[in-house]
Amino acid sequence: MKTIYHLLFIFSLFISVNNAMAQVESINTDRPDQSDGVYTIPKNTFQLENGITVAKQKVINNLMLRYGLTPSTEIRLLLDVGKEFENKGLLPISLSFKQRIIEQKEIIPAMTLVGYVAFEQLASKDFKGNSIPFEIKMAFENEINDKFSIGYNLGTSNQFKDLNLSSALGYNITDKISTFIEYFSTLSKNGNEHNIDAGILYIINPKLQIDIAYAQPIYGLENKPFGTIGIAYSFQ
Image (cartoon, rainbow, N blue to C red; front, side, top):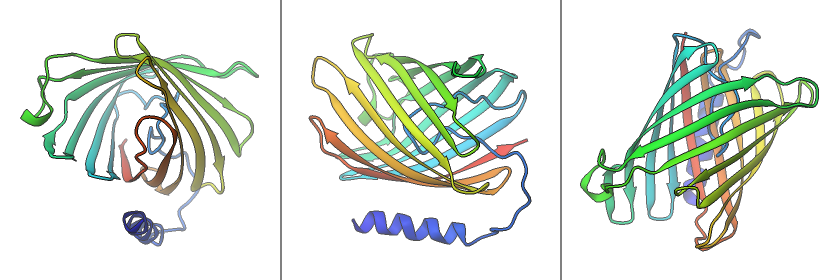
């Protein structure tokens, strides 16, 4: 619990900075929840999203670099560095893409295709392997009104053996502060994992966001709650 209190304290310090900016279109990120959103960043722009995930015997720095190829396509580079049990160093480097398919039309949700490929050879000795695992998913989103939205993902990994699900309810408290609660799970032959998390996002200015979240397992083989705190910046 001390770790979570420390994360909350740091988050409150960030919020105290610059709380009166003009209302404009703001940065949109894929953190700190576990779902991928339908949004893709503008063409020819970069976006950096970085966070620290803390759990029992685990501290990982998660870095994602996003680049807009077209108005509806982006590519991403994921670099995770940290310590898990006795293993430490660079985790397998991953590449990802997002392709928007359709925008929301009344009750029909917005849809985006998302893919990830990890290269286990591109890792530190403690995390190195010979496989190239991948994940592919569809991201959906329905904006209910200017306050509420529902996002949900359906995907597969582990050579199509696992089914990955998530669903998140988002609420805009103000133009700058939003919150979410989310359910996410993995269904596999080796055992099912069911989890919930919740978090807060704060827009400091249109290019800069900070966030914090906490996740709690509901049922599964591993009971490992974790917290995360992060920052994102859009180079527009």
